Length: 394
Image 1 (cartoon, rainbow, N blue to C red):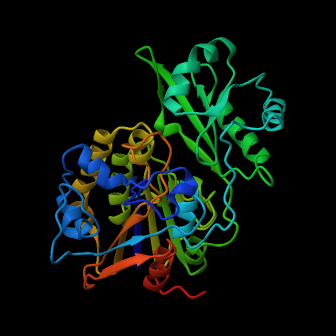
Image 2 (image 1 turned 90 degrees about the vertical axis):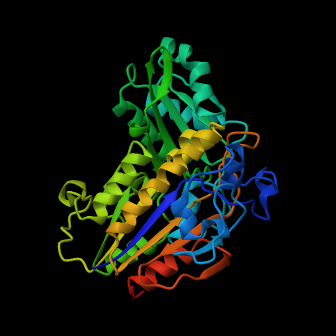
């Protein structure tokens, strides 16, 4: 069975796009290069062998003459710099109309309608902020009032944070779904994100494994749908299921960390996942001809990029590198491995928001001769090579 494996290192940017200023970014934003400089060099010998160092000057990752993978850079054509636009574009969808952002907080009519439908009694916050900061700032009021903490960012997101020891996780998810239903049409919000936390050792601490993204559904079929229609299966690891709202996904499993996502990817490659337990459709997919394993590794973005933690970001990249030999060892001749990013989130520049950046592209197959791929004008190149690799007919 032919397989394609896409691993997205969330927020792995490699330099500012030409239109960076339109997104309130600076020309110097460059997630991987600036992280490498901040820690006096990355330790990624396996990515070095892929040829990652040939794409830019990345401290600690040398340029090499004979890389084992094809490498290039992709620009984003969609008007955005978020998870949804990045993943949709690599799946074949270019977003011409950008999602709306709310730099001054959400309109009063949105908040009033949310309070009415959710019966939450009131809300706290409603302004752009780092998630960790707003939770620390408003936690005392949250404990007293039990009102949800609402906040946004430079991205098109409506985020709801609650202490799940006073507001149940089921209630939080229900409130997110209510917000999701409201934030359509003219409001045009990309994602509603559940941000559960608990007080641990006296400090509000987010529970990553229970985070959920309530996205808008893709407006037309993607490469994922094409695979399902061509007798294939699509296994989403991490938040892939949420990004595509289950559309084009046959199997899905959420993760609480990069390590868990990488371990599950190894299990998927070794056919060790219990597919019957993670199947999200009515089909059994027992006689599939083709397969896509689609993994999102979110820690780089969520735990380190947004928190201006260059050292943590570097450690996460170094950890991913240690899994590469294990992944390559499980690849067969008919497997195509793609590693890329979906946007930037440079922890070394001012602010805690995503950065409008290009992303690196690594393509590996045991039998293919590595090539210099150059620079592509959009992320849809990923969908194209997956389509060609799996011999998908439209």
